[in-house]
Length: 275
Image 1 (cartoon, rainbow, N blue to C red):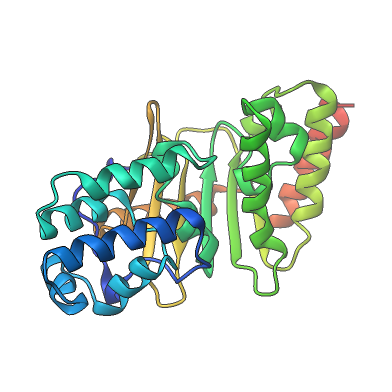
Image 2 (cartoon, rainbow, N blue to C red):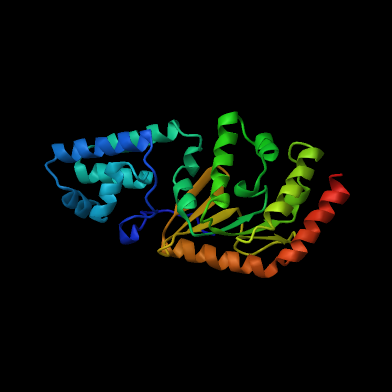
């Protein structure tokens, strides 16, 4: 998969659905209002300069969405404010429990109607149990953030989640045999949820797929892809990137075991290797 890059396309004005305001997004929005007012611009004026809808500017200013960093840069350019808003965005990331390279993606994930994910090294984050996550992450805050991410699967209107795990993930020791056994049990339990489809892919070389990735599709059809890399990761809503990811995921599903066969394999590894 090519490394996503370039300027995001904000189709329909916003890449993700509006969310509940937080202290950080409210503060950021107030700064946008202050700078826009100083520039004697209306919301519509700023929207036209930044190539988004007026409603999206309203969401940012009201704190009901956290924009991506590249959009903060675009706002600085539109307002002639050097790096004021980009620096403010960085401050939001510093105060969050997410690594900077991932900070663009959680909102898209949280508001998605359909999630597709491939992992070839570790259990996908939304399917990790707490012990497994604790063995991987550095501190309690990061573990708590990962557990909060998983709440979308148990909400009133959960997204459809399709996950393909490389079989090697089941055999890769994380935290000790007891942790691996409990993680396998957790995978079996979550795979029984109606809105979750978990498949295991045989260990093999899959052309064009070199790293974990996740595709978040919104109710309006907008898609954003997160691609893990050695030094962090990238997000993109570029149609070429998202289409490539969708095709790659379809190919992986075709090579993977069925949902039922995958459950049998998970149980086999759990009982034979992690007992």
